[in-house]
Image 1 (tube, helix red, strand yellow):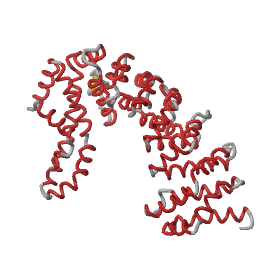
Image 2 (spheres, one colour):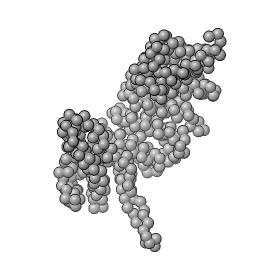
Image 3 (cartoon, one colour):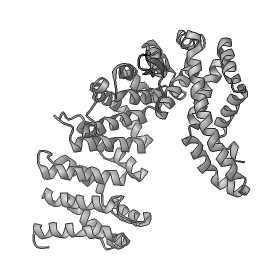
Image 4 (cartoon, rainbow, N blue to C red):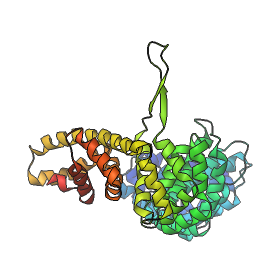
Length: 442
């Protein structure tokens, strides 16, 4: 290879390997992988970028490589310090230059490809400065959110979702506070549909959400006034509203969610949550001279799941006889227990869907041996979950708490169940199934 032009052409020629992944092992054994990766340290950034682009192509999920073949290639790359060399190039590339901008995009592509292996994702968070760099990159002010800014937010979300250790380190650096600041402008304003900005915002929400299942993440979320921001989004947002619900569901959930629950009540959050829960829409009658009437809105499955999750967390975590718990119970009792009636309506809808799936499963079970039933158990549980089993169970958790705490609520629930010749036994059965989700497949 006498000149840099020849070298660049030879590097580009390696893309043919994507059609022959069966040669990955031999490519590594001959030392070619080490030579390719070493080019990332070339003083000519164009050569380095060309090598990065080829590495991105070779490791892309679209290449029809067997897992073993992909592993041989990636292991050889990691052995010659690929991750550090990638970061070194991030530090020297200038996005004002179009070629460097494309190079950075390819670096992010390589990181995405390698992060499919959890150990590599953890190493990227622990042994390199990629996460701090990504956090800094997504804060760059741009007239329009660029492809690289959006991709950086996506990679950050992937690294956080892939590793608890990455999340822990990220939370300790006050990353949640920065993400909430970046989300704050969208409390009232929606990004344009189908744009890089819309994906960017989605990825910011994903990053915050995955950090909230950890107790320290909840603490940092509280300190950054995340509850208050979410409540503004519930009241005034559009695109941000369902995503704020998801944040609240994760923040309030789990054994460590009690403080978040109390903060939501103190911030007048019950009104915002129940306003969505009891949202009504106008329908017009025929003839058109008749006045329109209001009916309860039908939420999508995810919105319903998060609303029920928030309510069940509040009932579980707010201390007995506390002001917050009394205010919560009063919400369910007011207006002739209309919110309990709403919960029961949701329960009926999901119970019908799950029952239909259960009927199909029972027919399938009747034709199978015990061993075959055991093999199908996971598939059957997945089908029941798709039908809404989790939301049914969560609705029954809410109902069970209310029945236990208020005699009027208990009477209302029993009356509504009685309309279909049911009793509290159906609620008990659902909750038992929550404890042992495989009990139905014996």
